[in-house]
Length: 403
Image 1 (spheres, rainbow, N blue to C red):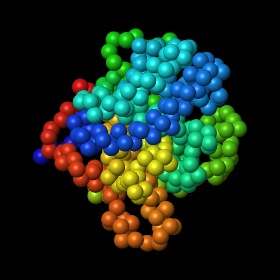
Image 2 (spheres, one colour):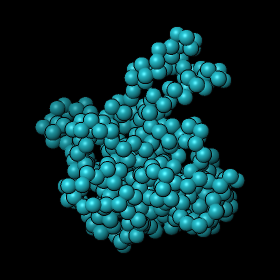
Image 3 (tube, one colour):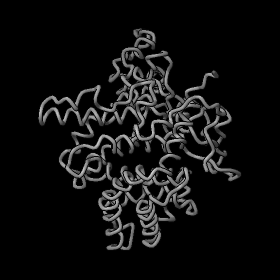
């Protein structure tokens, strides 16, 4: 049997997940359920505020920031796969009038209220893009938007400082800015092209800003190498603070080889990304997914992942996480383990919260809970459609083309 590259496998699974979601009534019902609180708690207050003032510049700062995020992500400004209004060149074009802002909010709400009518991979990706950005707005909103449990949820699910630090941008590696010309998480030369010298892309074919285009490496070793190099050359206050944080001697002659510090500070996530069955490193694009973190923290805070009786719905959480993965991997932002690890941390939160309330239970054991096990893709997918995990079919190197 032909051995398939992990990147091929993950691109296939992401595409299959979006396709399944576009044709599975149960999945679309789940996504519709979690969309209702987003409409009520994010879209509705934004619409009310802009209709009250009719002027973006007169909005409170938190509302301006929320709308700026949505406008940038859904115009052609950020060249995002799944953007709703690419006919607008920039966020400023949308934010220039209350009419345009309302159009953006209205089209998002209409999309979420008509999830049952979606039928293609592209349409489902757009729906997940909307959910990702609305949850981002909720996550970044003032505390008055959040429940009292928000900080506790966030502290258990969010990435550590070190996990965020292992993201290394291409410009830090002295690589020219790139854009993705393929979907999926491939990182070969054929997956990218350079941005033009003046920073604007000459539109000849579809291009995307994505995690794989922005980040050149995910590595504590690379991060510490760059840190030492920057400190030795510039002695900047920022590099000084980081050298002290990572306990690396400022005197170059007193330092151990960089590998020693990299091993000491290697993040739990980096260790986790090694397949225990083969010792093969799972694909990494940008580290633990902040987009997934914001989405799951938001939905948990809004009780959107609960059953009608108020108890946590494991099926719903798994389905939503699978759909987030489908979008984020297909769009080239993250690999599966970078999304699935956040899902696992959500389950950790639920288990700890239950333990604090009622003590140990038979249902809240690691064997009983639907955790993702590193290297076992099937363990991440909901049983209702886990059959899509099939590595037997040959595939091309690139991720599947969008419909």
